[in-house]
Length: 290
Image (tube, rainbow, N blue to C red):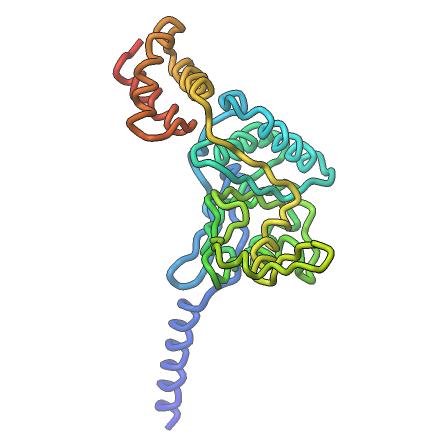
């Protein structure tokens, strides 16, 4: 009888060990000295980890041209944050390829020596934001939680999680965490013509948005700083292409000679964005080694 009981207990322990292996574990602190940036990843078991980014993009603020007003706002806010002064969560919106994500990466490189760090979180994992904030809350560094190309469809769980962590949760925001998000949508959600019908008008002419519209703007307005980016003119596009060609060691005379090719490249791509200018410069510099 005792032998049967021992075998039963042994099998029960094996089952518990297997169950423990697949259950989600609390988010643990990574090796903070391994990098200046981390990427939050959710494993198939439901266990989240902060993986160090071994090769951080080396872009600098000086590399970014024709976005001086936007650069000044983001840099000022980041300086305040790193210095321990009040600063805002930031939403960067506008035309694609105009430097929104690059500007955040450049700020990281600029202020990493002063204690700035970055954690990239995908939209699908935003429901775990409270756990991430809890892990970094006691650290001396300042952390930017970076959400790139952020937009939501109706009913996605990450939408309400982000609203709560920005402003509305019973838990106070920690002073060493800010959220910087980029999006092509000003209000982060799709907007439809039929929603204009939910506006109401009073007798004195006042216009009040309906509940649908209020819900859609309620997330974006929780970002204290909005920074808008706009499509580049032809001259601005050429200036950006020249900047990147120069960074690849192309001499001024050759940069001037490359202008017609840069315009054709943009015409073929149907865009004069900073991303297209960078791609042209890489192609041209690769075909014309110094």
